[in-house]
Amino acid sequence: MKLDNTVLDNLIEQAKQNPRKRQNMDLRTTPEDNSQRMLNAMEPDTIVPIHRHKHSSEVLAVIRGRICQNFYDVTLNEQGERVATLTESLEIAAGDSCPICIVPKGAWHKAESLETGTIIFEAKDGAYAPLTPDEII
Image 1: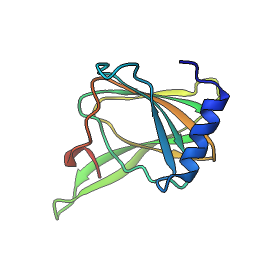
Image 2 (image 1 turned 30 degrees about the vertical axis):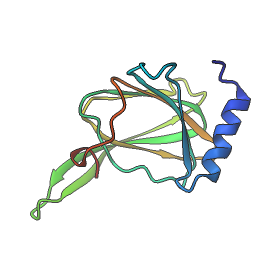
Image 3 (image 1 turned 120 degrees about the horizontal axis):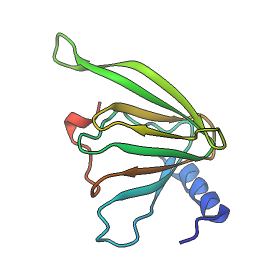
């Protein structure tokens, strides 16, 4: 499958039309493929919750645009509610000397699109499974 500018442009347009302001493209080649590989077009006003992947690290590469990859320390307050404290923020842009980062397994994180037309490539181990309540804030 060739992923040329036409494919990327179409993905961006779909994200702009999507109420969530993001659109992904599954890059698995067969339904039996148990990996997670996708392109994700993200507009600046999309909302990605703070979350973690308990069973996989995540590789993230910026194909177009620019993101802020935030990392958090999550603790419980006196009421037993999770509280996230920002610990690190990486600005990553397409064309930079290093447009890739690895999110360690179990790390609380979220990506924020910093400009319109941003597309990231994401890869995680194992088959897709929705986030569970203990993996999302």
